Amino acid sequence: MNSQFRPLNVLTDFTENPFTFFAHAPILLAGDHEQYNAMTIGWGALGNLWGMERPTATVYVAPARHTFEFIENAKYFVIMTFASCTVAEYMGYHSGRDVDKVKVLGLTVDYTPNGSPYFVEATSVMECEIMYAAPLEEAQFRNQVPKRLYENFPAGIHSMFIGDVVAVWQKK
Image 1 (cartoon, rainbow, N blue to C red):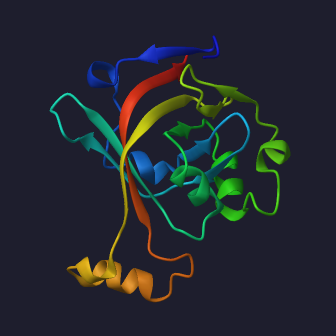
Image 2: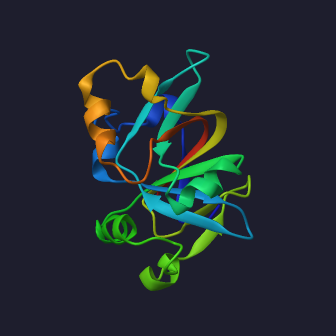
C-alpha cells in the first residue's frame, strides 16, 4: 500500500455516516493487475452481516455497465473517495469501453497487499472481499420505488455484491 495512506480500523475509527456515504459518489473499482475498470456509484450500504463485528459494504452494479464483468470475476472490490468531484463526474458519464478514464484523469494505479487496484489520488480506500453476489429480481419488488425506477432503466436491473471489509486506508 502506498505510504501516503494509513490503515484505519473500520470498527473503531470509521466516522462516515452510512446513510450519506454513497450520496457523495464514491468510485468502485474491480479487477486485477492485468485489467480493471472503475465507475461512480451512488447506491450502496454499509453495515454488518453474518457477524456483529463483520463490517460489510454492499454495492449495486447494473449488468450493462463495463465494470460489471470485472466485479463478476473478481475476488475483491475497492470503494474510494476523492477530495474533488472531478473523478466522480467524469467516471459517471464515460464508459471504460470507450475511453481510458485513468489516462484521461491522470490517475495513478497501485495495488493493495491483496492485489486489488486502487488510485493513489483517492482520499480513502476500502477493500472488500466479495462474500455474496446476486441479481435483484423484479418478482421480489415489494413497492413502487424499484418498479418505477426500472421501467425505463436501460442498463438493466442491478446485481448486489456484498463485501467483507478487509481493510480501510485514509490519506495521512
